[in-house]
Image (tube, rainbow, N blue to C red; front, side):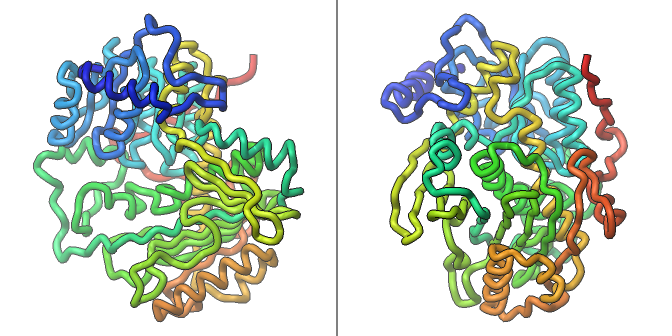
Length: 487
């Protein structure tokens, strides 16, 4: 860190108890071995990177030595924070030589896997933002790269490092305070606005080296109004709300409800649409899916719409707006970032949980694992990140292969949490004067997955499997990496 005053301020937050130590993995916020200096580079210097920088700055012995962004304005702003760091537009130049020991990747989603693989090939350890992958196949290659090159690789699902999660798992599984878990629901209800639609294609800002920004994505016309951030809502570069926020809350369910015993669902059905807006986005702003795990059924509902055409509030829903509900024999638990509440069968609160969101601990956890060169210390090791991202990738596939919604098709899944969710979505759409049984709303057939091969099997599998791997632009092809064999 290059600003002593800033370091003193951040350390004062630690001393004041603003950030606590992590129970998960038993890692401490401040490293005990301050002599083990880590040279860190940032690949991507936008808004998310700035948040990560604040948290990695809390970790002793971490020196930011390199910065990379194809937008020279963003790169310049990061250089103001770290004036001694070297700046690059092309990450391949940053990765050359011994300038960095590890990198933090907070690029657009379509770059995550290729950037991580290039870094690990160059002998660097990697912290990569969620969602890990833009398609399921490339996530597999990233896991294989971590094994082949023996690198530490953590995904940025920071809630994994919140001490609260260990308390929740003890409450649900060891104490069985609410009895057996019967089903789970995941929510992401957050209002967003349309991204606009231009008559002529948007020209990238002059500050952006567009070829490097685009990387492995297809070179298509940009018809949205803003260049930055709204790439999330274009499947060419983003993963929609499912990959943006859905991965966090689905990861919480995998962690706290399943204790990671279910890597991927065995069957999935999903639907949704991009409705009420006439804009350039092509990811759904209303999305719902059912996951058959072989044990506890899970559903997810996402909406960026207001509660009605006349409302400014988010859509009505049970439970937290960005969180999950574990329905149990004797009540239910509602969890979200930084807090949770348990209710008995009468709806009375019987226990509360308070966390810190996890990010300061998550940064420390990564650096501790780098210092020890021990991936078992990681709270969100790359395989965990690949599996949680997989649920999102598969849910996006259901939307991409969907046909016009029909109640008779949705009724193939006769599970209460799914039936209720579909009914809620139908009511929401009605309040926006949209018929759920219309061309605007899609629904997939039930798709069956072979969790071992991570490929769809059976009826409709050919069409669905087309979305598990993308085409890569020349010069930015993602390599296929053979899985390491056991010795």
